[in-house]
Length: 212
Image (cartoon, rainbow, N blue to C red; front, side):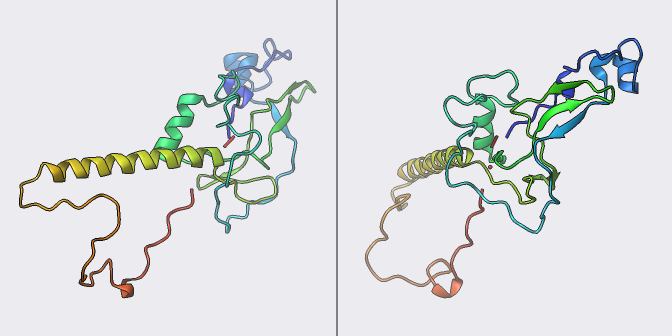
């Protein structure tokens, strides 16, 4: 999901407020600094249903930012993220939210009656506690493309840790034993431990980890 409000980009046109300011913003910064423009959304926003937990898409949507020819990956000027941003978000685990079902401004309207078209990439959902909400009130889902790249980064990290552990064990003293990072358990009797005792219970499920 990308957001690029036109007023932050300084793209507001002069509607006569350069000479006759209509607000403090235009008085201080000219027409470009006007704060009177209001978004006209394509969808009516329902109250956010904050009791619901956000999920993660199983795959990429048709307009996913992680697709090879997306505006974000091809450097579109009105995209608020680029290829480096997408990789960084996936690598760090910072959620990237799917835009499907979110509202966006079809146009921006000035009290004078002037309008400017909205950007097709300018999704503006309400956020509560860091979670964006779709127009129907449900929480957005984490991006399927982001989740796939995230899993690749996690796998690389696990393989790197495993390789480091094996190297350390190989370089240890002869008395040290070398247990492989992964593989079947050795044959023979086992003494119950906190990890093998069924009474200890199963591990907690991983956190569900959405896009433009």
